[in-house]
Image (cartoon, rainbow, N blue to C red; front, side):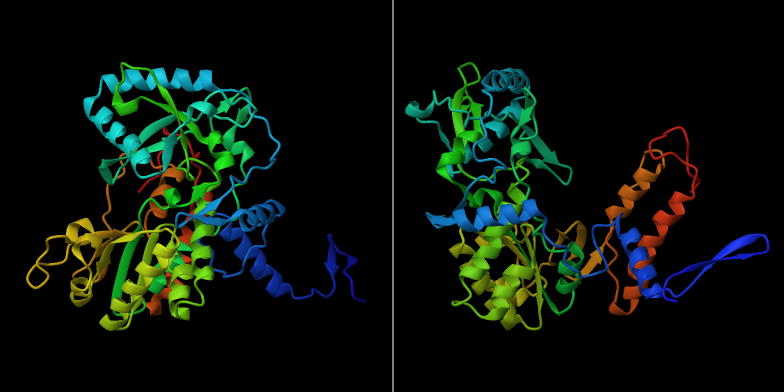
Amino acid sequence: MDGPTEVNVNFCRVDNGIVQNGTDNLEQQLQSFINMDFTERLSDQKIAMSVEDKRFMTMMEESVTKVHGHYETVLPLRDRAVKMPNNKVQADMFGLRLQRKLKTNEKLASEYTEFMENLEKKGYAEKVPDQDVDRNDGNVWYIPHHAVYHPKKPDKIRVVFNCPIQYKGVSLNEQLLSGPDLTNRLYGVLMRWRQENVAIMADIEAMFYQVRVRKDDCDLLRYLWWPEGNFDGGMKEYRMLVHLFGAVSSPSCANFALKRTASDNQHRFQDKVIESVINDFYVDDFLKSVATDEEGIQIYRDLKEIMASGGFKLGKWVSNSKRLLESIPEDDRAKELKGLDLENDELPKERALGVQWCVEKDQLEFNITKVNEKATRRNILSVMSAVLFTCKETDTDQRSTKPKTIPVCLTTTKNPTENPQTEISH
C-alpha cells in the first residue's frame, strides 16, 4: 500500500504509511522557513525569473545600444502606451517648499546647487529644449527631488528623485518594471575577497548615471530647478538623460549594463577578467583578492580598461599591498591614500561593504555603537543585520547557523515588535 492509512486504536486514531523522501523534504522546508527572514541564503540555488522579470530582460536586450561610449536602454515601462497625467502643478508646489528651505540654509543651498549644476555639466541632464517644453502627449512626468546625507558621510550630499510620489493615483515607479535582482550575494563577494593574500577594493563612480536612457523616454524624467542657483528667479524645466537614484528600475538597469560590459568583451580579455566583472561587484563596490602583487597590478590595468569600455569609471582604489598601490596613480586611489608616504606611513582604515577594514593589518573590525532605543524585536534585528560575521574557514558552520538561531529566540519573547513600553531584559 503506497498511500497513508488511518487506523483506530485506543484513545486516538493513527495515520501510517510510507513517507517518500521525508528527511529531505523536512530539511528543505526548514531551510525555506529560516531563509524567509534572511536575504543571504545558505543555498546557491537560482530563483527562476518571474514573467515580469523576463519581460524586463527582453526589453533590455532589444533596446540596448552604445551611445558616446555608454550603454543606453529604454525605461522599462509596464505599458509602452501608458498616458501620464500632467503633474507640473505638483512639481511647482514641491519646488516652492524646496525654495523656502534653501533660502534659509546657506550650506544646503550651496551643496544642492553644486550637485544640480554638475548633473548638467557631466551630461547626466539637460535643459528641456524650447520646442519640447509644451509637449503634452501623456509622455511627460515631473519628478520632485530632495537632498539626503549618508550617516557615515555627512559632508556628501546626494539628490534623490521622488519617483514613488503619486499624482491622481499614478506614480512613475508604478509604471516601471523593477527587473530581476542581478546583484551578487553580499556574503559571497565578501568571502571571495578574503580568500587570497592581496586584497583589492575599488568603486564605480556614479554607477546609475553611467547608463543612459533612450531619448524618447527622457521626458518622463523631467524636473524643475533654478538656473545658476538663483532662487529669486523662476524655475526652468530640465530632464535626466540617465537612469536615476529613486527609480525602482535603476538597480537592475545598471547591473544589466555592468554584466553586458563583461559579455561584450569576452573576446578581448582573459576569462578571469570577465569573471571578475560578473562575480566581484556588489552593486558599485568592487572587491577582489589575488595571490600576488603582480596579479593585482594586472587586475587593476585590465579592470580599468574593460570598465571604461562600458562607460564606467573605476576609482577609489585601495589595497593592503603597498607595491600594488605604488603602481596606481594617485588620482585613482581612495581619498585617504592620496599624498600618503607608502614607505613610512601606515595605511588608513576603510569601510568595506558595511564593515571597517584595517588595511595595514588586513583585518576586519566592528565598531559597535550603543543603541539608545527600546529593545524591540525590530531594533534587535536591525542591529544584527548591520553586523557581518567574518571568521576563519573552520568556523563556517558555526558562523552560518548562529545568526539563524537568534530570531527563533525572539519569536518566543512576549514583546510586540513596535511596543516601546515593553523592554527585553539584556
